[in-house]
Image 1: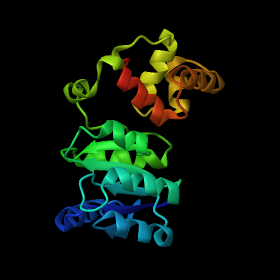
Image 2: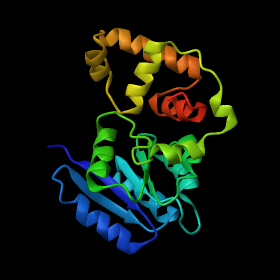
Image 3: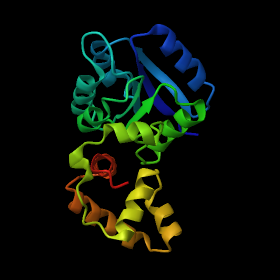
Length: 208
């Protein structure tokens, strides 16, 4: 079984130790490094080549938003999963390049699912954000109309749920090629480049 290489970044040692003990119970997860701040994380990333960086936002010196930008420049293939107490930085995190945004009250199974979803090419955005918190993050601009068709909206909702292209095709009785074409149309209509940005924009507009 291929292991998923994880870098933990949190300024609280007890949090890092708890995450390490929990994650290393899983045979497919391996903690390859720990950092208590952004500087330490950047110094390690070339040497340990993590696939997933599980990080907090509030840290001394360089915060998680700035660190995400620097990490994505330094290691474009790294997937950043925010694990934080704060829900108000969601849009900033996604714009900086984070793949997922999870709150620290997430349960163990949801966290494991989020990490593995990254390996499978999915974007576990907002997995632990309940509807009432998402509603607080919307703005009047987010209520603007969209020109997506009903099928495109359905596909977009499935993307937000982390369903793969193959899974969407199966659920909607479509060919994978047809789903891929629809996904590209959705990207064009929302003026985004990938699934993560599409979901973030859809939530910003309040259309899913």
